[in-house]
Length: 308
Image 1 (cartoon, helix red, strand yellow):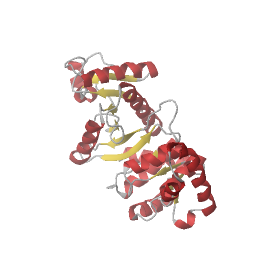
Image 2: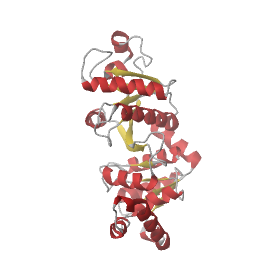
Image 3: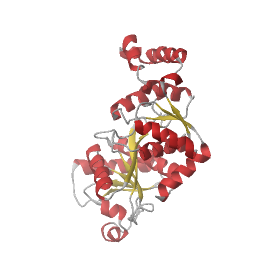
Image 4: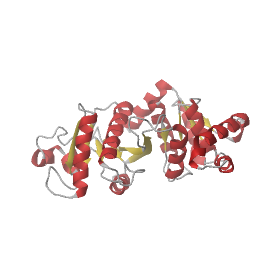
């Protein structure tokens, strides 16, 4: 797929170091080999011999200082660091690597917890969320068949402000990684007041906040998905929309809608779903589906390298 090829080519130009803590997962091992062979990034597979025991002790002490006010005990911290995931997160925090990718054998909650507590949340957004890059074959919509879907993995029921922050972070990722001009559609079951309800009110309020945060961003909402991505439908339902049926960043009203949508598109349209890519952190971290392929790992590493 052209989108995937472009992502890998762009990653080669930066050649960042990305940590892979799941050293005993066969998919991750194979992905690390491909990443090195193709020059996508410098893959640091955190096998036990790559973990410096003195550095690990220092990270344990630092993490304890960070979390002791929350009632975390030293024994619990030591147990956390039995997993290389936290070592990878602390390497990222310290800048010794440019990011990390995990999730092949960890839950999203595991990866998010390590990312938030070690790497930290970006002050500007104050929320961690996620997105997928969806590459749909034989599709004329979006950006040459490519979309950003958010949030599909982290925030269950976002407030209007959180929804606006998710939209902004997703648009910025699309521009940085894919070199696209973001056109953001805040999705609903209503287009321009065709229905009423609290969920619709949340999307409308989110749109207002987003316009205040990023006045020059091409965005609109509330809108149904056909009005967001199909120009012919947009001419009928919403002819004066700045998105004009050409949305390439789709923001779902809640996690339930987003998660269902990306899985339907992935399975029925045979799309590539790359992610979840974590948003709102101080350094790039990517989650993986536990059903990920080797290619998924490679592409998440490439995206993390571009974002670094």
